[in-house]
Length: 120
Image 1 (spheres, rainbow, N blue to C red):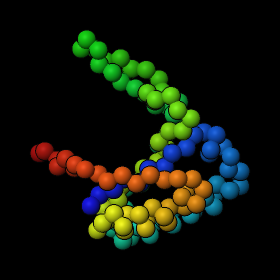
Image 2: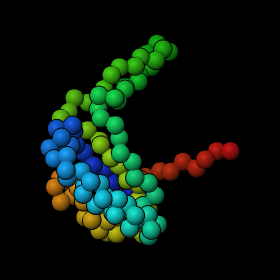
Image 3: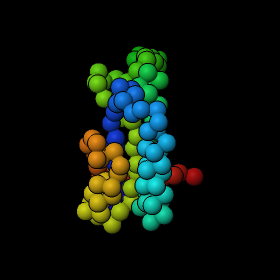
């Protein structure tokens, strides 16, 4: 079963970490990634750029309209996501509980309902 583990934050959240803490934070997350890549349960780990770099695309009257920023007005935005492949939800929850960020804030775990196969 595939699951998406999602971390939310904002620039204020990341700026709250003192600069001297970043090497430790990165090392802890790298260790988490290495552990679960090693078990085969982590398929991918992706950090996203700050929300000011996001774009929203809508097609109206056949023409694309691109605007700055995320669509939703919110204090927090999706900052990182992890794709897991686990035997069941219980195992995915165990992995989510080991996510270093879970000790400070919530992380979300969502089942992935459909997976498109590549069309060649």
